[in-house]
Image 1 (cartoon, rainbow over the protein chains, first blue to last red):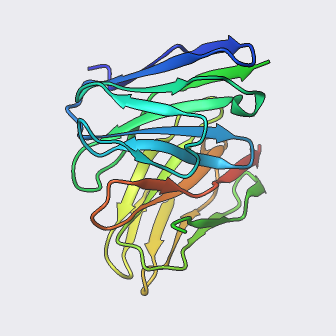
Image 2 (image 1 turned 90 degrees about the horizontal axis):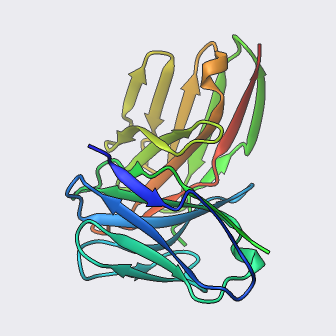
Length: 112
Length: 111
């Protein structure tokens, strides 16, 4: 039982490049989330998906797109990376009814 | 907005001292969750509070939910070096799956 798996763990991009962060969970959870974590800023919600086929904006959605490919997978795409998107990205999932969230190990992204 | 305010942002204590972090909201919370993130790690769920005035304990950790359900606290008695990390509170709005975190309190413990 792997829980929440994120790939890659580390990535360096040049300004303007695109990439997709992958996230998959094997707990049959309905809700999935993408957060970014910057020093002193806590965990800020980028996008979330309450169920397969639905996505909603969080606190800081600009510059990102998401896809809830199926119940297991929720990907985050940066179409044109900017240095301001240098951060640690966490994916999380949880079951129905405000239960606890389970987090992936994180992706450390640097945009130069 | 739906943000929860956490204070303090940083806390540095000597081992054996107590520690408290507070989480405040301008609106009534349907529930509050607490998470711990060790340095270099990912957030891990500690507890969820739902009822007004609720108090829950986990060994040296005591969690409280205010009577008005607008604030919550996490108190650690006699801190140990294993308590080092950042403690976050998180809220979800009733009827919504949106989960929003506070900025966290980073705890360091001097041995």
